[in-house]
Image 1 (cartoon, rainbow, N blue to C red):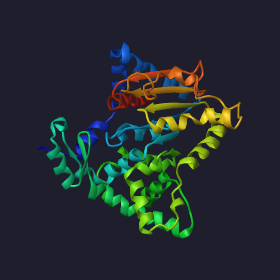
Image 2: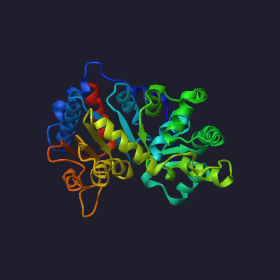
Image 3: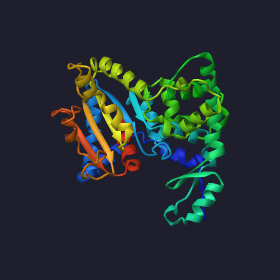
Length: 342
Protein backbone atom coordinates (compact mmCIF):
# COMPACT_ATOMS: atom_id res chain seq x y z
CA UNK A 1 0.00 0.00 0.00
CA UNK A 2 1.11 3.56 -0.74
CA UNK A 3 0.03 6.41 1.50
CA UNK A 4 0.74 10.07 0.95
CA UNK A 5 1.14 12.54 3.80
CA UNK A 6 -0.70 15.80 3.14
CA UNK A 7 1.45 18.91 3.36
CA UNK A 8 0.87 22.60 3.87
CA UNK A 9 2.18 23.52 0.43
CA UNK A 10 -0.87 21.97 -1.21
CA UNK A 11 -3.13 24.00 1.07
CA UNK A 12 -1.33 27.24 0.30
CA UNK A 13 -1.38 26.74 -3.47
CA UNK A 14 -5.05 25.76 -3.48
CA UNK A 15 -6.00 28.84 -1.49
CA UNK A 16 -4.16 31.47 -3.52
CA UNK A 17 -6.80 33.58 -5.35
CA UNK A 18 -6.23 35.36 -8.64
CA UNK A 19 -6.26 39.07 -8.00
CA UNK A 20 -7.59 39.76 -11.51
CA UNK A 21 -10.62 37.53 -11.10
CA UNK A 22 -9.35 35.06 -13.68
CA UNK A 23 -11.29 32.11 -12.20
CA UNK A 24 -14.56 34.02 -12.49
CA UNK A 25 -13.76 35.06 -16.06
CA UNK A 26 -12.87 31.49 -16.98
CA UNK A 27 -16.14 30.18 -15.54
CA UNK A 28 -18.24 32.84 -17.26
CA UNK A 29 -16.57 32.16 -20.61
CA UNK A 30 -16.46 28.36 -20.64
CA UNK A 31 -19.41 27.22 -18.51
CA UNK A 32 -22.24 27.73 -20.99
CA UNK A 33 -24.42 24.64 -20.96
CA UNK A 34 -25.92 21.89 -18.81
CA UNK A 35 -24.54 21.53 -15.26
CA UNK A 36 -21.84 24.07 -16.07
CA UNK A 37 -24.45 26.67 -17.00
CA UNK A 38 -26.44 25.82 -13.87
CA UNK A 39 -23.31 26.55 -11.84
CA UNK A 40 -23.00 30.02 -13.39
CA UNK A 41 -26.72 30.72 -12.94
CA UNK A 42 -26.53 29.68 -9.27
CA UNK A 43 -23.44 31.82 -8.65
CA UNK A 44 -25.02 34.87 -10.29
CA UNK A 45 -28.20 34.23 -8.31
CA UNK A 46 -26.11 34.14 -5.13
CA UNK A 47 -24.59 37.51 -6.12
CA UNK A 48 -28.01 38.99 -6.83
CA UNK A 49 -29.45 37.73 -3.55
CA UNK A 50 -26.65 39.35 -1.53
CA UNK A 51 -26.66 42.55 -3.59
CA UNK A 52 -30.38 42.99 -2.94
CA UNK A 53 -29.72 42.86 0.81
CA UNK A 54 -30.36 39.16 1.33
CA UNK A 55 -28.60 36.86 3.77
CA UNK A 56 -27.39 33.34 3.02
CA UNK A 57 -27.34 30.07 4.89
CA UNK A 58 -24.97 27.34 3.72
CA UNK A 59 -25.61 23.71 4.61
CA UNK A 60 -22.80 21.16 4.65
CA UNK A 61 -23.42 17.43 4.31
CA UNK A 62 -20.99 14.68 3.37
CA UNK A 63 -17.34 15.17 4.24
CA UNK A 64 -16.80 18.68 2.94
CA UNK A 65 -14.50 19.64 5.82
CA UNK A 66 -12.20 16.69 5.17
CA UNK A 67 -12.31 17.77 1.52
CA UNK A 68 -10.84 21.04 2.89
CA UNK A 69 -13.67 23.29 1.73
CA UNK A 70 -12.31 25.75 4.29
CA UNK A 71 -9.85 26.89 1.61
CA UNK A 72 -12.70 28.89 0.07
CA UNK A 73 -15.49 28.79 2.68
CA UNK A 74 -13.37 30.55 5.32
CA UNK A 75 -12.96 33.56 3.05
CA UNK A 76 -16.69 33.54 2.26
CA UNK A 77 -17.30 33.82 6.00
CA UNK A 78 -14.73 36.58 6.49
CA UNK A 79 -16.23 38.60 3.64
CA UNK A 80 -19.78 38.29 5.01
CA UNK A 81 -21.00 36.13 2.12
CA UNK A 82 -22.33 33.58 4.64
CA UNK A 83 -24.55 34.44 7.59
CA UNK A 84 -25.62 31.06 8.98
CA UNK A 85 -24.34 27.50 8.60
CA UNK A 86 -26.15 24.20 9.10
CA UNK A 87 -23.82 21.22 9.12
CA UNK A 88 -23.45 17.67 10.29
CA UNK A 89 -21.43 16.95 13.41
CA UNK A 90 -18.80 15.41 11.17
CA UNK A 91 -18.28 18.64 9.23
CA UNK A 92 -18.20 20.64 12.46
CA UNK A 93 -15.40 18.58 13.95
CA UNK A 94 -13.45 17.51 10.87
CA UNK A 95 -12.43 21.06 9.96
CA UNK A 96 -10.84 21.32 13.41
CA UNK A 97 -9.30 17.84 13.12
CA UNK A 98 -7.61 19.04 9.94
CA UNK A 99 -6.52 22.27 11.65
CA UNK A 100 -4.64 20.48 14.44
CA UNK A 101 -3.48 17.27 12.72
CA UNK A 102 -3.09 17.98 9.01
CA UNK A 103 0.51 16.71 8.83
CA UNK A 104 -0.56 13.32 10.16
CA UNK A 105 -3.29 12.76 7.58
CA UNK A 106 -2.57 10.25 4.83
CA UNK A 107 -3.99 10.19 1.34
CA UNK A 108 -4.84 6.90 -0.33
CA UNK A 109 -5.19 7.71 -4.06
CA UNK A 110 -5.83 4.04 -4.94
CA UNK A 111 -8.59 3.59 -2.35
CA UNK A 112 -10.82 1.79 -4.85
CA UNK A 113 -8.32 -1.07 -4.97
CA UNK A 114 -7.98 -1.56 -1.22
CA UNK A 115 -8.69 -5.10 -0.05
CA UNK A 116 -10.49 -5.87 3.23
CA UNK A 117 -7.06 -6.76 4.63
CA UNK A 118 -5.70 -3.35 3.59
CA UNK A 119 -8.62 -1.71 5.36
CA UNK A 120 -7.90 -3.74 8.49
CA UNK A 121 -4.29 -2.56 8.44
CA UNK A 122 -5.54 1.01 8.45
CA UNK A 123 -7.76 0.16 11.42
CA UNK A 124 -4.80 -1.27 13.32
CA UNK A 125 -2.91 1.96 12.71
CA UNK A 126 -5.94 4.00 13.90
CA UNK A 127 -6.30 5.69 10.52
CA UNK A 128 -9.97 6.35 9.80
CA UNK A 129 -10.58 6.46 6.04
CA UNK A 130 -12.90 8.95 4.34
CA UNK A 131 -12.75 8.01 0.65
CA UNK A 132 -9.11 8.82 -0.24
CA UNK A 133 -8.15 10.52 3.02
CA UNK A 134 -7.28 8.92 6.37
CA UNK A 135 -7.87 10.85 9.59
CA UNK A 136 -5.41 9.96 12.40
CA UNK A 137 -7.27 9.04 15.58
CA UNK A 138 -4.58 10.01 18.08
CA UNK A 139 -3.46 13.36 16.68
CA UNK A 140 -6.92 14.53 15.55
CA UNK A 141 -9.78 12.86 17.37
CA UNK A 142 -8.19 12.13 20.76
CA UNK A 143 -6.49 15.53 20.87
CA UNK A 144 -9.83 17.25 20.38
CA UNK A 145 -11.52 14.88 22.84
CA UNK A 146 -9.10 16.14 25.48
CA UNK A 147 -9.89 19.75 24.59
CA UNK A 148 -13.63 19.22 24.55
CA UNK A 149 -13.68 17.30 27.82
CA UNK A 150 -12.18 20.37 29.49
CA UNK A 151 -14.98 22.68 28.35
CA UNK A 152 -17.73 20.06 28.70
CA UNK A 153 -16.85 19.25 32.29
CA UNK A 154 -16.30 22.90 33.21
CA UNK A 155 -19.79 23.77 31.94
CA UNK A 156 -21.27 20.69 33.62
CA UNK A 157 -19.77 21.60 36.99
CA UNK A 158 -20.96 25.19 36.64
CA UNK A 159 -24.47 24.09 35.69
CA UNK A 160 -24.20 25.78 32.28
CA UNK A 161 -25.32 24.48 28.90
CA UNK A 162 -24.10 25.28 25.38
CA UNK A 163 -24.63 24.10 21.83
CA UNK A 164 -21.95 21.85 20.23
CA UNK A 165 -20.58 24.65 18.06
CA UNK A 166 -20.35 26.98 21.06
CA UNK A 167 -18.08 24.51 22.84
CA UNK A 168 -15.87 24.43 19.74
CA UNK A 169 -15.79 28.23 19.73
CA UNK A 170 -14.65 28.21 23.36
CA UNK A 171 -11.76 25.88 22.52
CA UNK A 172 -10.72 27.76 19.37
CA UNK A 173 -10.93 31.24 20.88
CA UNK A 174 -9.07 30.21 24.04
CA UNK A 175 -5.87 29.97 22.01
CA UNK A 176 -4.76 26.91 24.00
CA UNK A 177 -4.42 24.78 20.90
CA UNK A 178 -2.78 27.32 18.60
CA UNK A 179 0.55 25.51 19.01
CA UNK A 180 -0.96 22.46 17.33
CA UNK A 181 -2.16 24.26 14.18
CA UNK A 182 -0.73 22.55 11.11
CA UNK A 183 -2.39 24.56 8.35
CA UNK A 184 -2.61 28.27 7.76
CA UNK A 185 -5.38 29.33 10.19
CA UNK A 186 -7.01 31.37 7.41
CA UNK A 187 -7.96 28.07 5.73
CA UNK A 188 -10.08 26.85 8.65
CA UNK A 189 -13.75 27.74 8.20
CA UNK A 190 -14.49 26.90 11.82
CA UNK A 191 -11.86 29.35 13.03
CA UNK A 192 -13.27 32.03 10.72
CA UNK A 193 -16.75 31.26 12.03
CA UNK A 194 -15.59 31.42 15.65
CA UNK A 195 -13.96 34.80 15.10
CA UNK A 196 -17.23 36.08 13.59
CA UNK A 197 -19.37 34.28 16.18
CA UNK A 198 -21.30 32.96 13.19
CA UNK A 199 -24.52 31.12 14.06
CA UNK A 200 -24.25 27.38 13.37
CA UNK A 201 -26.90 24.66 13.53
CA UNK A 202 -25.72 21.07 14.02
CA UNK A 203 -28.69 18.69 13.83
CA UNK A 204 -27.95 15.08 14.73
CA UNK A 205 -24.65 16.02 16.37
CA UNK A 206 -24.82 12.85 18.46
CA UNK A 207 -23.76 10.60 15.57
CA UNK A 208 -20.42 12.39 15.10
CA UNK A 209 -17.15 11.16 16.61
CA UNK A 210 -17.19 13.76 19.38
CA UNK A 211 -20.88 13.11 19.96
CA UNK A 212 -19.97 9.48 20.61
CA UNK A 213 -17.17 10.61 22.91
CA UNK A 214 -19.60 12.85 24.79
CA UNK A 215 -21.95 9.90 25.28
CA UNK A 216 -19.01 7.86 26.62
CA UNK A 217 -18.15 10.67 29.05
CA UNK A 218 -21.74 10.64 30.33
CA UNK A 219 -21.63 6.86 30.75
CA UNK A 220 -18.31 7.08 32.63
CA UNK A 221 -19.77 9.74 34.91
CA UNK A 222 -17.33 12.47 33.82
CA UNK A 223 -20.38 14.54 32.91
CA UNK A 224 -23.30 14.40 35.33
CA UNK A 225 -25.95 16.20 33.28
CA UNK A 226 -26.51 14.64 29.86
CA UNK A 227 -28.13 17.92 28.77
CA UNK A 228 -24.94 19.97 29.26
CA UNK A 229 -24.62 19.91 25.47
CA UNK A 230 -27.73 21.37 23.87
CA UNK A 231 -28.89 19.64 20.72
CA UNK A 232 -31.79 18.77 18.42
CA UNK A 233 -35.06 20.42 19.34
CA UNK A 234 -33.28 23.33 21.00
CA UNK A 235 -31.48 24.05 17.74
CA UNK A 236 -34.85 24.09 15.94
CA UNK A 237 -36.46 26.39 18.51
CA UNK A 238 -33.46 28.73 18.25
CA UNK A 239 -33.69 28.67 14.45
CA UNK A 240 -37.42 29.41 14.53
CA UNK A 241 -36.87 32.61 16.49
CA UNK A 242 -33.78 33.57 14.49
CA UNK A 243 -35.58 33.08 11.16
CA UNK A 244 -38.67 34.95 12.30
CA UNK A 245 -36.63 37.97 13.37
CA UNK A 246 -33.99 37.95 10.61
CA UNK A 247 -36.39 37.38 7.70
CA UNK A 248 -38.42 40.39 8.77
CA UNK A 249 -35.41 42.51 7.79
CA UNK A 250 -33.70 40.53 5.05
CA UNK A 251 -34.60 37.73 2.67
CA UNK A 252 -32.78 34.54 3.69
CA UNK A 253 -31.43 32.16 1.07
CA UNK A 254 -30.32 28.55 1.35
CA UNK A 255 -27.27 27.14 -0.42
CA UNK A 256 -27.35 23.39 0.13
CA UNK A 257 -24.27 21.21 -0.36
CA UNK A 258 -25.34 17.58 -0.52
CA UNK A 259 -28.51 16.19 1.05
CA UNK A 260 -29.29 14.67 4.39
CA UNK A 261 -30.06 16.22 7.74
CA UNK A 262 -27.87 19.31 7.28
CA UNK A 263 -30.29 20.56 4.63
CA UNK A 264 -33.51 18.76 5.59
CA UNK A 265 -33.51 20.08 9.17
CA UNK A 266 -33.25 23.86 8.64
CA UNK A 267 -35.42 24.14 5.51
CA UNK A 268 -38.36 22.77 7.53
CA UNK A 269 -38.38 25.80 9.81
CA UNK A 270 -40.56 27.81 7.42
CA UNK A 271 -43.49 25.38 7.12
CA UNK A 272 -43.24 24.78 10.86
CA UNK A 273 -43.57 28.51 11.51
CA UNK A 274 -46.53 28.75 9.13
CA UNK A 275 -48.41 25.54 9.86
CA UNK A 276 -47.66 24.87 13.52
CA UNK A 277 -47.19 28.37 14.92
CA UNK A 278 -49.46 30.30 12.52
CA UNK A 279 -46.76 32.88 11.86
CA UNK A 280 -48.11 33.29 8.35
CA UNK A 281 -46.37 36.58 7.67
CA UNK A 282 -42.92 34.94 7.85
CA UNK A 283 -41.52 34.85 4.28
CA UNK A 284 -40.40 31.73 2.47
CA UNK A 285 -36.74 31.08 1.70
CA UNK A 286 -35.64 33.73 -0.80
CA UNK A 287 -33.10 31.70 -2.79
CA UNK A 288 -32.40 28.01 -3.08
CA UNK A 289 -29.54 26.09 -4.64
CA UNK A 290 -28.56 22.47 -4.17
CA UNK A 291 -25.38 20.75 -5.30
CA UNK A 292 -25.96 17.03 -5.31
CA UNK A 293 -24.84 13.88 -7.08
CA UNK A 294 -28.07 12.17 -5.99
CA UNK A 295 -30.06 11.79 -9.18
CA UNK A 296 -33.80 12.37 -9.22
CA UNK A 297 -35.57 9.13 -8.38
CA UNK A 298 -38.73 7.86 -6.72
CA UNK A 299 -38.83 8.89 -3.07
CA UNK A 300 -35.33 10.39 -3.02
CA UNK A 301 -35.51 13.58 -0.99
CA UNK A 302 -31.85 14.43 -1.66
CA UNK A 303 -32.49 14.02 -5.37
CA UNK A 304 -35.82 15.85 -5.43
CA UNK A 305 -35.98 18.84 -7.75
CA UNK A 306 -36.53 22.18 -5.96
CA UNK A 307 -40.12 22.54 -7.22
CA UNK A 308 -41.17 19.65 -4.99
CA UNK A 309 -40.41 21.90 -2.02
CA UNK A 310 -43.22 24.24 -3.11
CA UNK A 311 -45.75 21.59 -2.09
CA UNK A 312 -44.24 21.49 1.41
CA UNK A 313 -44.43 25.23 1.92
CA UNK A 314 -40.66 25.75 1.87
CA UNK A 315 -40.15 27.58 -1.42
CA UNK A 316 -42.45 29.78 -3.47
CA UNK A 317 -43.24 29.85 -7.19
CA UNK A 318 -41.07 32.96 -7.60
CA UNK A 319 -38.15 31.76 -5.44
CA UNK A 320 -34.93 31.58 -7.52
CA UNK A 321 -34.16 27.84 -7.65
CA UNK A 322 -31.07 26.04 -8.89
CA UNK A 323 -29.87 22.46 -8.84
CA UNK A 324 -26.43 21.34 -9.96
CA UNK A 325 -26.10 17.59 -10.35
CA UNK A 326 -22.39 17.19 -9.83
CA UNK A 327 -19.59 16.61 -7.32
CA UNK A 328 -19.77 19.25 -4.59
CA UNK A 329 -16.02 19.01 -3.94
CA UNK A 330 -15.54 20.38 -7.47
CA UNK A 331 -18.55 22.66 -7.79
CA UNK A 332 -18.73 24.43 -4.41
CA UNK A 333 -15.21 25.95 -4.51
CA UNK A 334 -15.89 27.23 -8.05
CA UNK A 335 -19.14 28.92 -6.99
CA UNK A 336 -17.44 30.40 -3.94
CA UNK A 337 -14.61 31.67 -6.15
CA UNK A 338 -17.19 33.28 -8.43
CA UNK A 339 -19.01 34.93 -5.52
CA UNK A 340 -15.68 36.17 -4.15
CA UNK A 341 -14.62 37.49 -7.56
CA UNK A 342 -11.46 35.41 -7.66
